[in-house]
Length: 281
Image (tube, rainbow, N blue to C red):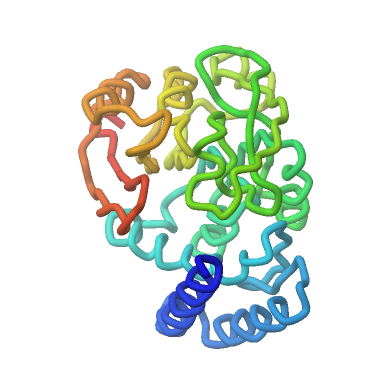
């Protein structure tokens, strides 16, 4: 019965998202219609790729076609505070399949994107989604305070919730069975950036790491940034007080963070989003 209620809830949210997506004025009518047709074909045939904003997008989760259309809404919210066309470099930490990056590319064709995804079982799909785009670079690492190899957990076909914490990886899912794998963690020191050919300054850093925000920020201390957009955990492992969040942001290359936007947590949600600007940039 709980599974039926979940399916009905998802169906209701899906149709509401369809109407919102159709109203996304920054996306061409053709791309909106192609996506919606592709979405229902993919759901009916259980395909694992869809036509999304002008490109093929590959995924592991059957429900991904119903989730992708939320990303334009997210980026249009950011557009109220950021000129996306002025963002020349984006550090995408916790890329998963590249959902955020693929959507950002549509809004800002000139941005160089660096996507980090440590889950080596999922990473090939991220590579596949980025392979057509010479300005989209992918790297198979997590970010943290020091170089290490650590355990990482995810639920098969639900990899977007992959986390250093098993409980976070299975939160709000019908199963608690997770796969444990090992991932590479690096810190973006000047030496590591030089070795990987990465810049040490980014116009925008996006962090979505399911409870690992503190570790990631500690791995970015040497990085300079203009805007930082981070999903902050609450009521799950890895959550930290906002005072700690602000202290860590301020340590990053002497940044002086100023709050631009803070989202309200969804009902029953475990996170909220924060967008800050570095006033010393």
